[in-house]
Length: 170
Ligand SMILES: Cc1cc2nc3c(=O)[nH]c(=O)nc-3n(C[C@H](O)[C@H](O)[C@H](O)COP(=O)(O)O)c2cc1C
Image (cartoon, rainbow, N blue to C red; front, side, top):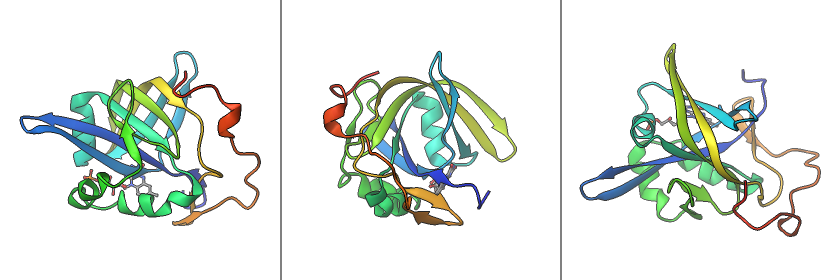
């Protein structure tokens, strides 16, 4: 799988506790498209993940597909929960309109509601229905291959903000 180039995403969810809403976000590269109609996507999370435990309770999550300039965000959001939650307040992110999970302003994003979860080996495959999305992002995407972050040599045209309908759309 080291040879399989992927994009890099930040998945976000939250937990509502007596003292308020606690957001969490983690770096993932297991995002997959599952179905077009209805629109379904999946992510695969380590079974003991604290983030996964919150997601399975709220049943709401968001995925932001990071642009090339966001590798520092990817690095920090792959750390332990205390580090992640300490950094979240300074992130260029805000609650998504449909789920309240954090979405990144510089990234393409989608908001999801939980459809199904399957325990497989040491991971849980989470399938979500996409309930809102915004395809714009700042420049070429960030890639992950051979254990490191890369930028495409030939990024092609980037979705220009002016060419897109008003955000958010679906
Ligand atoms: C590029 C990259 C991709 C990752 N992809 C995944 C993933 O798809 N699923 C996953 O469970 N963890 C993935 N991780 C690890 C998580 O970012 C994070 O370290 C871990 O899920 C945190 O677990 P916790 O919720 O128990 O703190 C990835 C890390 C990196 C650097």
